[in-house]
Image (cartoon, rainbow, N blue to C red; front, side, top):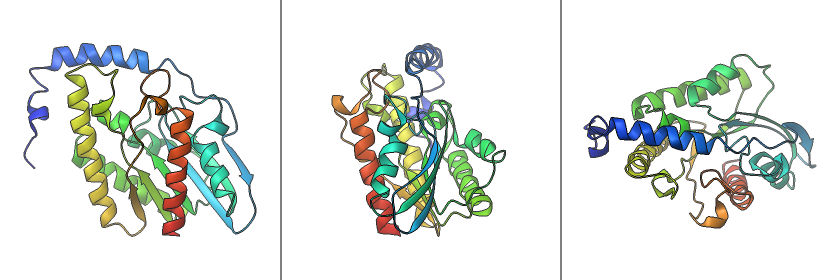
Length: 236
């Protein structure tokens, strides 16, 4: 696959990109993961085992509590239709590879459905589209073999090229790479029996951004959870 212009410019721009990236990482790590339950049971109806995995967005950074973060918002919506037994495995800074390693060391409870929110840290660490797709495929295989997953929802990458607090040219570089990885994820999901791709169709407006300008706000988590619920019900 031919290199994009952004990939060719990384070498001459490397010193500037490094300085900008260090500054961004410092600012982006200011908000903590919110307190609250990371597992539980809620709702009535058919039993549904749900596993949520991912990075700081899955961990709820930007929300005040887990109940207002992705896990709380998603389980609340699903509990209107199912008895949801859920668990959250997520941490700030996680990549596909580190989550895969983490899953190897936790107890294996059945997960009918897995929601995955990964990719931003794969982008910032410069993982190629080929490596990203390889790791995502390995993750899907592990979720099927160890957790008996029947449906895996891979949430799409956010539009990093639109993050106003990312300085240029770093914003453009990361935006191009995020688009590249998201396209690769869609290609992988298109040919996979249970791995599905859900584009992150959240309007890029100030009310959907947390105070740090990088993470989702509680409103964004609510909309994201609604999209995921619709996606899950459609594929069930």
